[in-house]
Length: 112
Image (cartoon, rainbow, N blue to C red):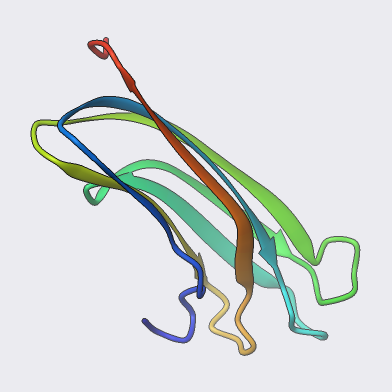
């Protein structure tokens, strides 16, 4: 894990099938002087299902915490892992953090 990767990680193991995934995380910037750009991804067995990028303001500002919502659908022929990862693209330290995460995967019928 590099310094720019955020410390939390959400993941759930799934049997083969088709799924809809929903996730929400709160990204927080502890840096008191710089804004940070953070990208979060929802993946299923390394396939991108959704991506969202937010800019979080300096610590203490009204925009220092941002909610990120992700959703997507995917199909796996064998066991899979659905996960959320966030990356602080600024490269600045202290890196942004994320928490208050939720990840839900619901098996569905055939995806069209």
